[in-house]
Length: 324
Image (cartoon, rainbow, N blue to C red; front, side, top):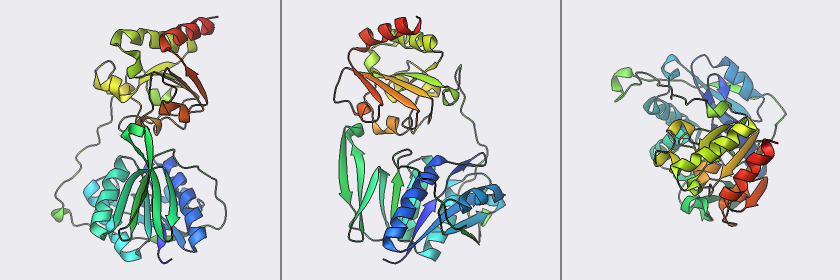
């Protein structure tokens, strides 16, 4: 098999996102099996610390696109630079996270390179040289296995947390500078400002214990029960997308790939079915407890402990126990 595996790295505030290391673990496995190279691309301005972090991450090559034009994320600019790299290096496969960044970049790169794209993947195997992925359907209630019949490069985006992360050791990667040639006059858009999302009374991303409400709480008034449990445990409340969509809680409390990724020590899912978009954003929690009266709810697949029962019976008992 010719080509290489190319991982598109993500970083926020000077820190490499965990999904990048998950993709590098998968990429290293494939590269070793196929006898090809593994490269990771980092884009930004003044990226020395990011280069250092990635140089010991298992990749053979760290491609560095370091330029002032890349300091602030712009989909148009980033897509142009990444597409140039893909055209130059001709990778067999491009791996990215199923995140805002990955969703925008994977579609643009696949289109510009004439490749094939599959998004929201959870696992990857091969049928000969053709990738076969596993991805969720119908809100995560079913999984499907899909083969790619189209041409390379195969651009695949993976749910954050779906892949294991293994600390990879070995040789230090080669650093290769990538030329950046952006003509500002040719751009159709420009980023004026990055607006940080407002947080609620507490930033759920910083909470050690989260008690999360789903559609199963049935009514906005029943959020009181969720709040009582959170207070008894010294935690905070959060919610799934339906609760936010119905206006029962503001989006700042929503857990999901379109809202907040959370990694508390304890995550208690109350009446949450477990759609893939929700699970992907909380599956890295230290301990996951699910309460649902549907024994077949997908949330039980990722829960460390599952309680099959009516949350209106279970939660009061938990509150009583927590209060001693």
